[in-house]
Every structure is written in C-alpha cells, then in structure tokens.
Image 1 (cartoon, helix red, strand yellow):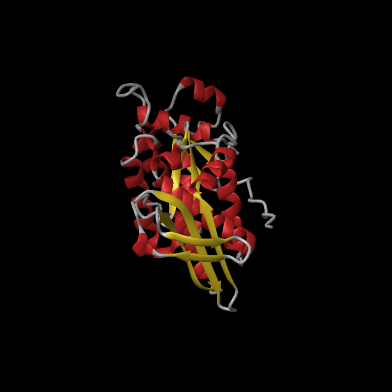
Image 2 (cartoon, one colour):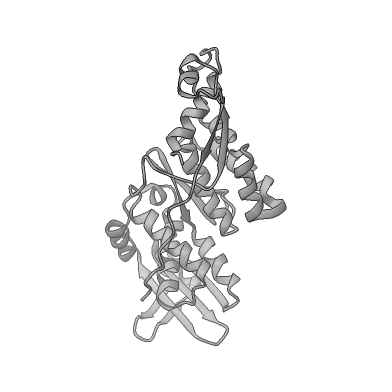
Length: 293
C-alpha cells in the first residue's frame, strides 16, 4: 500500500532519470496526468467503466487540464479521481457542456455535478416525463403561490434582462407534478449559508443557481435512483466541504510500477537487487447513503 505522495515521488524520480538534470526531476503538471493515464491499471479501470469510449474520455481529461491553469496546480491523482467519478456516472467532464465539473480547491481537484448532470441522471431513471429549470427575469413573474404551487409567468411582459428568481418543474410518468420558485435573494442566502467556496458561483452564477433549484427539488420530492443518491451525496459533500480531503493518505485501486534508478542506497535497502517497485492503491472511501426529506 502506498500513498499519492509515493506516486508523485516515483514519477519525479522517473522524470529525472539518472542524470538529475532537466527540471530538477519534476514532471510538469500535464506530464504527471499523462503518466498516470498511461498506467496499464488506470487504463484498465477506465476501460471497465466506459468500454470503447475510454480513450476518448481519457483524451478529454488531458484537454481539460491543458485548458485550466488552476487544475494544473492540483494533485494529478485528485484530477484523475474526480474524472473517474464522472466516468462512473457516464457524464462528460468538458466544462463547456455543464454536466460535470472538476473543480480545483487549493491543490486538490474535486468532482461537482452540474445541473445538466442532475437532469440527465433523472431522465435515465425512466420515471420523469418532464424536468426543467429556468431563470425568471424582471416583469415576467405574474403570480406565485407557494402553497398551491401556482406559478404564472408571462414572457411577453419582460421589462429587462435582470434575473429576479429561478423556477423549477418536474412531472413523473405517474402524473405527480412539482413546481418551485426561489427569488434571487433566497438563492443568495442559500449560497452564503451552504457553499464553502465561490469558485462555481463566481464563474457561472446562473448555472449554480439552476443546479441548486433542481437538486433541492429532486432531493425533496423526486424519485432518486441509487446512482442519483450517490451522486447527490458526493456533490453535497464536495460543495459544502471542499476542504474535507485526505491530504496524505489517498488510495485508488490501481497497480502502478515505476522503474527506480540503480543506486548504492537502493542496493542496501533492496539486497535482492530489485529495481522495480509496485505501488498499490485501494479506494477506502465509499459514499454514504443520503437522508432525503
């Protein structure tokens, strides 16, 4: 068993080789991600999850890191781990699509589900006839009764592009319907109370607001598959507790072999003269089942 730090140290030694030259034996952030993705065991994991779509998904991980300087500062294993969560949910990590995001918090990357991801997972259950969320702009709201859930919107009466609130709606195939409306002030109070990082809100406030509407609506009144429950728990934990990470002891279920340079010190520690070290990781974190009200 070995930690993420062991992998990073091993990668650094491999990058430096025996010469000790170049960049001081340190891989660039992108090279570190590529090296891990080239591990046969990690490739096998993605193949098991995605099948013949694995190469395309792994290429999208490299493109994601290439396009985000903040992710380049993150631990490569945390980036790959976050992307693996998206892969298990069969959601793309392209941030322009809005299904799932790999968000940097300091030097750690964490998975966050986008509002489109929630919609996609809901539709996969086959229980929803319709689901949507939209911003309501100034002048469009005619009437909102929170008791009867009567929402009247007239888009022809828009006075400006200023957003005053967000509305969500879903209908199940059995006929059950739910409509919600949050004012922008209510959204802001929720953000200030529960969000421990403003990264997503600062980059796309509307997308985060729509996600809040859909997530709250589905968790209280929707039908959640096991897949949705696990995604919900991960998303809540990562958004509300972004600093809750295991800095030193992170494990992932892969075998990673790195060729060590032959040195007298290694010969003393390894009398058998073995130059290869196998590093095994195991995932010791399982999502808790959510308590939904």
